[in-house]
Length: 202
Image (cartoon, rainbow, N blue to C red; front, side):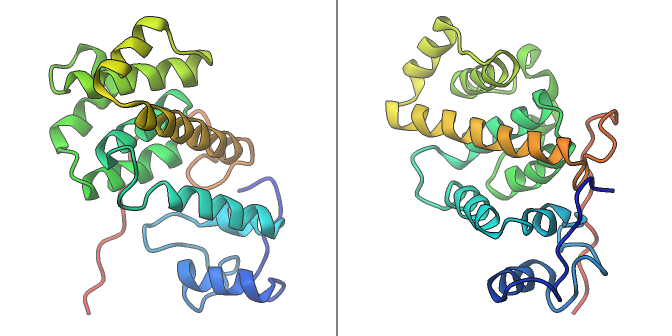
């Protein structure tokens, strides 16, 4: 149960109602929670308390997941998953395991990502990205040696985008955990993926 009240469809502005329709269809997401990916959806209904923040959040997150970004999608998703693990956001971890599969990250790498440091499944570039993520989320810094490894594999534009991705998802993970939203209502739970619901037959 979240710590703040949620905004029902009945009290939402026309813009928020339109956004709700994208995620929840014609249901009131407070009375009948749940999204197509199986999440409760209370991230959206709680952020709707301050509509401009909700749209700012949606636009910034979605913009970084569009095709044609500087940072390759596979590296982005490895960084976001590590951000979820180190930042202890079950919601981020679970959701982006699914996104990682969609952008082509092999299952063998996803199975090894919790213990990436002792795994031989990752490239040098992937290892540099995950090392930088762990340091930035866990210690608020990136060691010179780690940064040099990034520079050996990624151009400056990709490193800039990588750091922005890590920081943005870290911020949202902190908010979700602090407000007990989505899968982060039990902040002592082990880091496990929550499966998506079975596809509905048409």
